[in-house]
Image: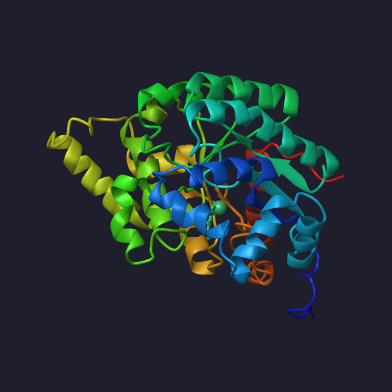
Length: 354
Ligand code: 1DF
Ligand code: MN
């Protein structure tokens, strides 16, 4: 029997955690400039402004883990039973920066992560960062990332300066992602200034709730704007149990149909499928931050066992006991292996362990 002080025992499967964050010091230097130049975006101020200045144990620990792509991270992975991390640059990535700074830093950020993956090829897998501020440059970076860096997935931290990827001006990014076969992890960002005030006043703007509301909205905007009719093979990854959209799906289908049929909004015209059908065909869902057996099984039932994957959300939700809880789920070994290992291997093009 393992005890809480020992790493979880090896399992039949590799445990691959698929929404893990890093922040190179070069990015933090750019963030310091943003934070020192008013007016500062309120969501960013309450997010990275907090982590980069708070003396609290949580903030200090997270800042240390975020910047490490070697021994600290590997030790935490060993302690918590994680064999492989799929890593992306922390929210909001380069998306809070002005366009030129974002486009300039994008390749450097991806080179830094690619170098870490080369140092630890059996432990790390990298997701490409892009700068939606320049959709064409982002599309080119996806090609470079796949062809030259060997990275096969992209992370986008929801909106960019209050703009959503449902806007066709961003669709060159989807075109490149579909053509290169790279899934896009639609990760949370702080809400735009126009949305966030009532969340901030109650302390609910962050990962506790605001993230899920805003990222769920973003995913729905992709569906209702017809992104998946135009790019039917595109795969979007949602964390945090699909930002609760599986739980909403019955009502989404009903109200979407009612709204379209009554021509209530010009922005909600007919599309080919129901929201629940897009969820089953164009989305993969990770359980980042949600070690709930009931929620995982409900989502597997709704979208299929091939589309639900494990994620920890390191270092924001570094939980040494989580793997033990999930290893013990009342679920067949076959489905558990899909959840922890094979779905991630397929979606993120991770080579099998030797
Ligand atoms: C937090 C959580 C911050 C996540 C994040 O990025 C983040 C947090 C700055 O707990 O404040 O990406 N998360 O993915 O849940
Ligand atoms: Mn995360």
